[in-house]
Length: 273
Image 1 (cartoon, rainbow, N blue to C red):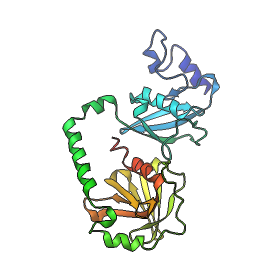
Image 2 (cartoon, one colour):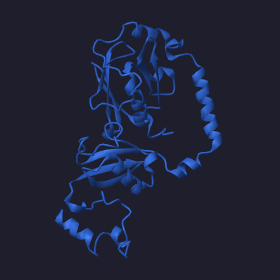
Image 3 (tube, one colour):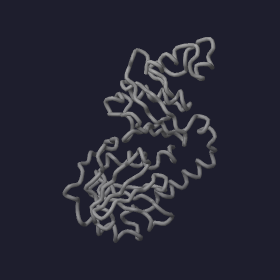
Image 4 (tube, one colour):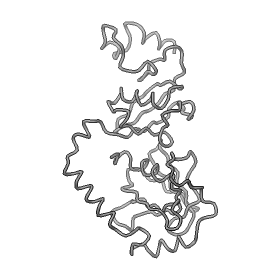
């Protein structure tokens, strides 16, 4: 670490430093150093792998820096404004907490979702209008639990009642995904199922008593959900794994506070807006 500090501080430092011959201030905030630098004042650093839009950045960042500070660092690396970032480490990264508080360790993968302002301006209005029309048509459909294709299947599972070991629900609240798997739910066969989100591997693990399916996030084409009638603090949810309704993997009794976090985690990198 001492050798690194000496190299970054002198005139013969890294190529990045050489681009500022007059010694002007760095673009990076003094709170952090990216791509192998050393912290000022001997602050403890943690090595991160920041992944955004198929680009990977090796970053050294203050362990006592907050999520908001990290967003500023990501902005300096990618040009992505903090307000347009979704930063994920075991769920959405809280802005007010430090990396130490949320137990970020060396080598941790930080997933970033979002589009630059130029990307947003490049989206044409006809495409947005078409998407709104599709959504309007979807809203006119019958509730999922009443659609003819899956009505019998849904009723067979829902009539079993709420599982005894279902996770508690908090209505009217949105929470980050917990650090433990979501469990105590049923699948379409009425068997117990748990969901484990492996952000470091970009996978969703769907586990049953018989086996665990490890699905790449990119293979999940869509996620749909709706509250269970009479138990609106829980949802029925489906992960679309293929082009037809028969390819939907159904999960029942998902606590409502995690529904948005699940959708953001699975679809966020492809459907930010």
